[in-house]
Length: 331
Image (cartoon, rainbow, N blue to C red):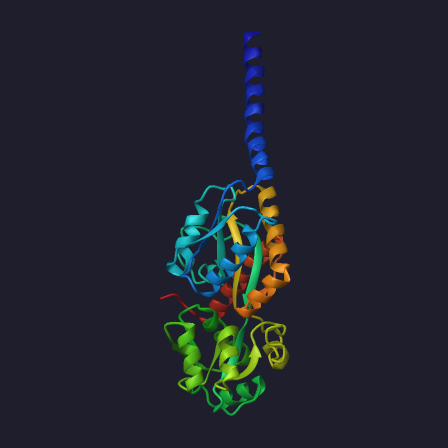
């Protein structure tokens, strides 16, 4: 009898213990947030990821939204991996978030040894937006559209050049996908950053490159470059008169460019993820926020946690396939 009572007591105690964490977690989610939130950015202040994070944080902090300060903390280094590790190992309570950038889905594809798994260790919250790139040439290059560029490149294999800010950078992957799909050989010329190779195209130092929308708009206004197409499958509302590569010459060509999205540590209660996602959508759909992001060359595109998770998965798969098929190797 004593043994039976002991077993019953143990079962009852186990049941209570199992319920307590759920109850506490559920209660925390219902009252979230009750203190300031940190949004970690893996890049230096002033860049696209940082700009998107600061604009979003301001909107989220408003009393009618989260009603708590959202503080930006820059942890640059290792292509965003330092910030990624910090967030992956943070408490799963919703008070530490990461503004993830597109580099996060390129590093695994390159075989980089990361201290976390992008799909396992993060809980996607919402996509924030993207900055499409523009395929641009120096005005001296005798082409007016993508078909003419392909024809010129085929007639001069290896002679034309494009700029890149490094191995596996968005411009590098876009250009190598272009080479592969168009069956051409345009030679990569490395630069320290995207601003440098944008200037190189404008000066005629290189023939062409994929240039970020903000840089392209400024150079187009001055007549320094000629825009042939945008990298995304559809035209960008930021440059509606410029066709896509897909519609111009290479059906199926689609590269998002630079993009940003919010993730949390894996294990954050679903109620908190849902609340964050909903509020981010509200903030990004506000006309003033859309206008502010558009001025920075960013197309706001909030989505659900499930949709963002699918996007991350698909981007890793696409980048892996591209890197393997083109023979790009991490040095």
